[in-house]
Image 1 (cartoon, rainbow over the protein chains, first blue to last red):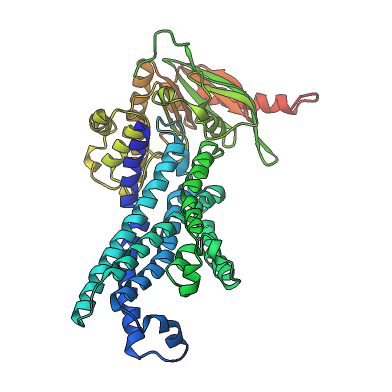
Image 2 (image 1 turned 45 degrees about the vertical axis):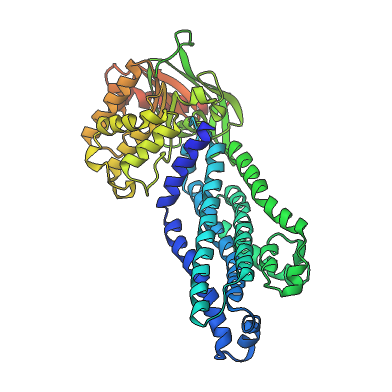
Length: 262
Length: 253
């Protein structure tokens, strides 16, 4: 426990100073409220016609605040995966690519513990960003709703809760890319596999098999595929998706314990 | 840290190491030891197998065959008690370029097992010892090559290891830095540490080592007395003899 606490302290400091974190944090926190309020306003302005209007049709009607937070959940579920994926690519792939990971050998803090701490720090960071993004969206939405005398009622709070839960699930889905980063020893290959997974998820959803595919579940659950697709997400699928993060952590720790030729 | 009174004299032991990268043999039966209180210099030409052997010793490379022991344990799986007494600088150091010099030293001390309350004093002491105090608040990425190497060494010794493995620790240092590291290595050995250091600089090695081990073709081909005259000539004679022996008809290699 002491070595994990030490590892968490040192990894948290390193992550706080990392360039990826410094760039991604404001992007993630600001993108979600801007996209949510902006897209809803655009959908209701009538300024978009044709295919664009069809895509935004779901946001054009209904309770304003609830719509903001539904959009927030949809954006967040993908944004946290991308941010977390880039995060683990940098945190795990880069030190293996440039050889710095070799310095983790022969330490009193075992490298498996360091790898676990690195997973937890990146996960904690994405979760904190998701919480901040939802909080900011709630504040922006409440202000927007008040300005047009619309209520911010319990359905909006429920949508905020679902957005946060979907964001948390999406954040956990980034951790398997720490496994990829460790196996490939390349941040670029990790980012490539992340993009590949997003494309694969699109295909799986198109084929109608998304309701049990963990990488599609958070997005579908927030209504990206429509109300029917959201209703089709079973509690078991949510639990399966939530189980990905601890499973990935266990695999990463095993990989780092067995690591050689660094 | 100090060695337990009942501890075996030999702190480091590599036995009959073999390893190849693809078809190229890097280690061909390398064996060597280092005792507590001893500085062993490993010298050899580029590609002789020095760094590969030190990577095995650091636990960073699992050899195809043979065994490595640090304080009686497999270096890839040191327990916490043994790891607290071990320091290695082979290849990239335990330095985060985004952290300041002081933060790196505190991090290194903590990861090497220095108790939380002692991390600050350990970092400060090492900062002064390696002459890094003027750069204490500077990010590691802004350091000159020489100061970056001082920081790398500082991060390796911040916990006062009893076994120290250093690969080319003075390659980027100015004369003052070379003297600092030489004194540091000698201090550690005089305090009972086993120090294994690789170098290309034979004159430097002669000043600090108790024993000079010559590695060539992936194995130890002999030892040199660091105190004798004309170390360079004796080194090349030993390497040449090893080559001629390997090329002789009927040679196993």
